[in-house]
Image (cartoon, rainbow, N blue to C red; front, side, top):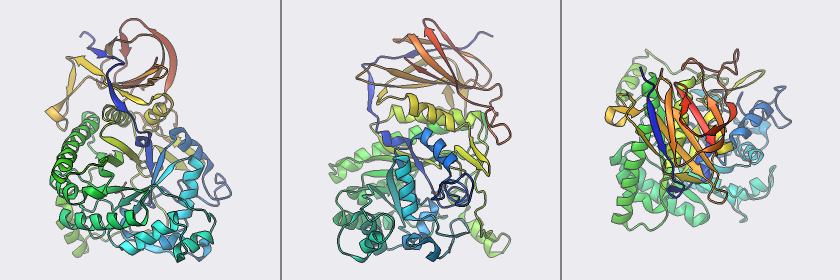
Amino acid sequence: MATPTATVLVDPRRTTGAIDQRVYGQFLENMGRAIYGGVFEPGSPLADADGYRSDVLEAARELDPPVLRWPGGNFASGYHWRDGIGPPEDRSSRFDLAWSTLEPNRFGTEEFLAYARLLGSATYLNLNASTGTIDEALEWLAYCNSDLPVPEVGLRQSGPHPDRHDVPIWGIGNENFGWWQHLHTSAESYAELAREWGKLLRWADSRISLVGVGAEDPDWNWTVLSEAGVVFDWLSLHFYWNELSYEGVLAGPISSEAAICDTWGLIGAAKRRRELHHDLRICVDEWGVWPEPYLSMADQPEVINRRRRAEVGPPIHTEPVPMIEYHFDLKDALAHATWLHVLWRHPDKVSLATQAQMVNVLGPILTTPDGVVRQTTFHPLAVARRCAQSTGLDVAVLTEAGIDAANAPNRGMAALDAAGTLDPDSGQIHLSLVNRMPDDELSVDLDGIGGPATRITLWADDKAAANTPEDPNRVVPVEDHIDVGGPLTLPPHSHVTLVF
Ligand code: AHR
């Protein structure tokens, strides 16, 4: 059979706009081994004097997150920030219902903010808009951002970092639409609460930016946008790609791309109908492959009934245990590479994103007692952080070749997904190419660009190849230098980055 072909059209005059660097953020949640045994492990020979794992920090620096979101996630919806303040030895543990885990509160606000400083990341705190109150939220905001002579500020001033933290981004709730959330609620109730919380938070500190909870549900989004859009800077979406087949995982990011376009349409309509004149965009503050079927809204009655019949009691964890940890494989990395393409195609719509999550829990960084594994999913983002430029390029792909995928828009995908970025000052161009063909090479013609380039290839003979503690470098990027003068051959199931 002849090698399938594709043409990539690049015209540096056609851009998709400036990329907000905050789309390369990361998310940390007090759950599983994300924090304890992940970023923070006092007593470990790998930890520094403050308890942060140096090996994790080094790997995180390669991902260079411009923003960090914390403390959850589902954990945020039961979290009381005062539990994590003050001398560590005086802090009490609390039982976290979201993850059935005893939370020691050793890693609280100061530990998180200090970690963000080590990484040079801006901070995004997610408020408890479920079991928390607006007073508690305002007091957390004062603790972090105020200099007024109020008790919360005094608390900060007597702690390890007396100066204001000036946390710029605050989220009002997390997935309040889902039954798995503490006190989940209707769109109407959430919108009313978020509008009033947003109003007061802004009155307390007009410099902050606010994230509101969106969903992959246009009805929810419309209600929230039209009733509370006035207080938000972003509407959040969460995307987890949990199909298990090769095609299914690869289609995940492009079905998310369709959801982004749909939501953007609703934002435009809400702006017109509600006369919102401020900058209101999409934030994707949880994204990634989650290689397991996820509970859906329809599962709630069954889960509650099984618990009532005591067939399944929630497990009780008194120590950090592995939760939703996986060995991601090459196909998962191809999905992550494709997701970056989505961000570069839509910088006008998405201006904040945080990967779920950074370490262990769904993470590209996996810890063992002896070190870290950079998972396959680590590499597309790490390469992008080294090579991607400031402006999205409007790259077009022409090809007849493709593969079927039931969960893709139109139930299929082109053989090649391509995107790129440009530095308008230097003219440097970076192109990112995902050959989706599971078993075939792809011959690619670049139209509009050529010449000497650095090529970085992420590939293995087996698309199910993974990096594990036993074999940590099974799938790593390989760099060489080429002169692009004719068709390029991409290996099957590969991610190839070119920097011109
Ligand atoms: O990232 C794991 C969980 O997934 C988060 O806590 C929650 O927001 C989502 O359901």
